[in-house]
Image (cartoon, rainbow, N blue to C red; front, side, top):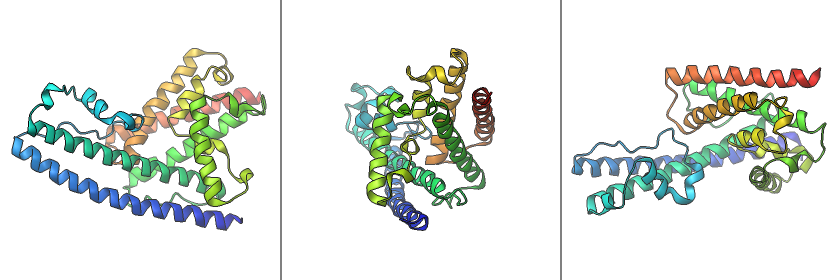
Length: 274
């Protein structure tokens, strides 16, 4: 398949995801209205929101995660009004989770789009404000730099480097890779498995027992310095990917962390190029 053909297929995938996103937004707006009505009748405020909180890994036990986050006991859910409130909060969280998954798939498609043709710009985020667009673009650039670093460091040492990554990272990326190969019907050598990892996977890769000493000269301090900054970046990335926009302090923090991580990447590259 030609490069143009692959770009068209990926853009079509993003467009479909955008339509899915609009449907989920409508559901979110409806649950927000119902939530406001429930709280008004209870004379309570909406203080159990999950804005900016990473809940993707808790999808299988969202009820328990919400109870843990907001310290909600089963006794507190004994009354009908509290049951009704928590049911609406749980439904809202499920909708937010759907939104996060759609946004992550759009981001994944954009990563593949820029791999196929680096001259293109990210697609499907036209409704973002200017700061959000800048942060989104910088995030895509940072992920590209991290993935290329991992390949450039590990591949010269071991052609079978992929099998050295944490099992969970491999399984998640393999699933996305195989799905893309099937949908796009492109030769496998036109796609890279590493381009299907999630942002959260970088922390696991850099702390993985089989490869961690290859990036930081055996220094635990440097390793945890990178992982800590990536963790903080992930929280900001999740917020910007799933709305609302970053405030001024968060924007400044993102720029600082972004610059720091790029500097760490450069230092690792400089060491390997000596």
